[in-house]
Length: 311
Ligand code: SAM
Ligand code: DTB
Ligand code: SF4
Image (cartoon, rainbow, N blue to C red; front, side, top):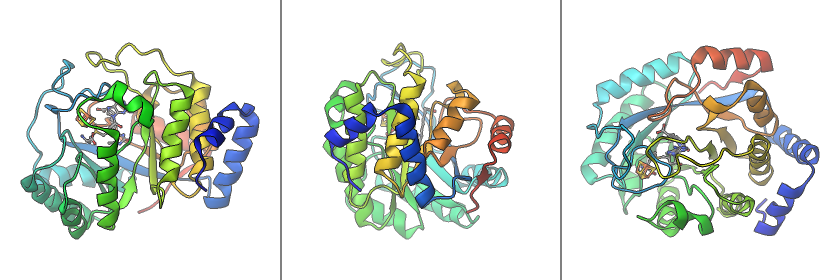
């Protein structure tokens, strides 16, 4: 049920255990709490991005050591997708450091999507802003999900990104919906935003009709050379609250514990799963930054009695 900003701010003020109790109850009404959906990321086009997103190591405006590389070939993508499937992923997400794809890029990615779908994996792509007609081309190729994050509240957006507007993101999201694709849309916390901004981010997501099927909640990965490199870390229990509130406000969506797990203890991740997270990114790398190793994740799954959802 969509909740307004005031209601969501009130959820943030609840005693921690009251909030966790509510979130976990909602979680059990909609999902088996042992089932975790696993996505694997591949950066199909790394670096050199013209946008200035303050968090991102791939912007060419930041000096982070990430090089501008060409688009991978379909053969390279298929090889990575096969390995991801063998390690238990049900969804394969292809990310490109573009402001948006050219039509030739869409054709190349469509070929990758066809090849990855043929392996029996769900497919997701995150290519930046789409123009009229591009989402349809991806849908025709069999793309299941399009990821496009709103990243933060409408109010905080302009503090982090100056090369596009919040409204531009919404326009792409509506094109994605119109083309019949499933939506993966979430944000990043720990960027110096206020609690009200975190509430605003969730309010925007929960006001979408229908809400996104997949909701990645990223904890900022502080990359040297980006404007947000020296942000103080977000208080861990505030992160758990954010996950819990995403679960309460988006009861039927997959809430993904996304970037930032490398910095989280097993205990913190366990609390996030209890609070309603039921998806994650697996694999040694996110797009350009490290992610927990497979052995660490399987030990955690074993300790918590979790299992990977099969595609
Ligand atoms: N260029 C496309 C775009 O921005 O939509 C797709 C790729 S972009 C890297 C995908 C998402 O990664 C961003 O929207 C942001 O939410 C997330 N991201 C990028 N850098 C991050 C970081 N340092 N920490 C956490 N999330 C990050
Ligand atoms: C999302 O919400 N997080 C992923 C995926 N969608 C594309 C990306 C995280 C990127 C973290 C920084 C990096 O590795 O470059
Ligand atoms: Fe480019 Fe996407 Fe990074 Fe922004 S988040 S700089 S659009 S790759």
